[in-house]
Image (cartoon, rainbow, N blue to C red; front, top):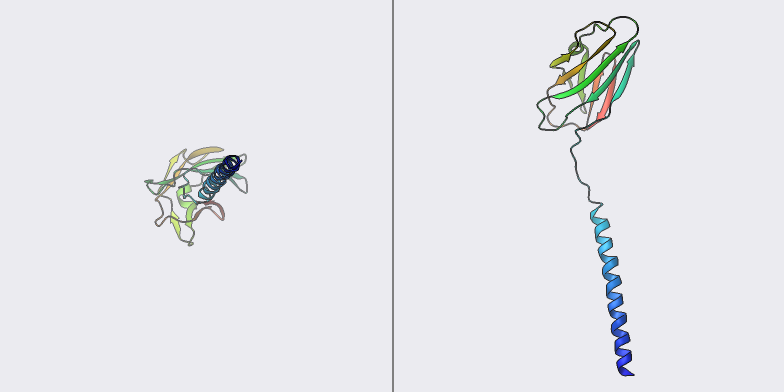
Length: 145
């Protein structure tokens, strides 16, 4: 009889220890998943800007800290008039402190026509801002980076 009680008590202790281990290890894995991990975002969403009769579709490219330039793929479209804007002159990059930066180059279709596309390039901003805005004339598009 005494042996049965001892075996029962040991069995309960072993089962209890097993459940404690399962619950404790599950709690540790969920708490470790709550630790924030900083990931450098290098792919950002395309945004569309409509200014009168011109539609700009803008896709930011590589904004990594190691990038030589910060690039924007831009598609321009209009059904009236010509796309004769010089994007280097009319576009500015604005950081989270309100500082404005002029584009360095436009690599793409020359001014004119109803459809243009190319890449507008800027020098990277240091220190890395929390967000940037691309201002084209009096309108802007914003991305959190």
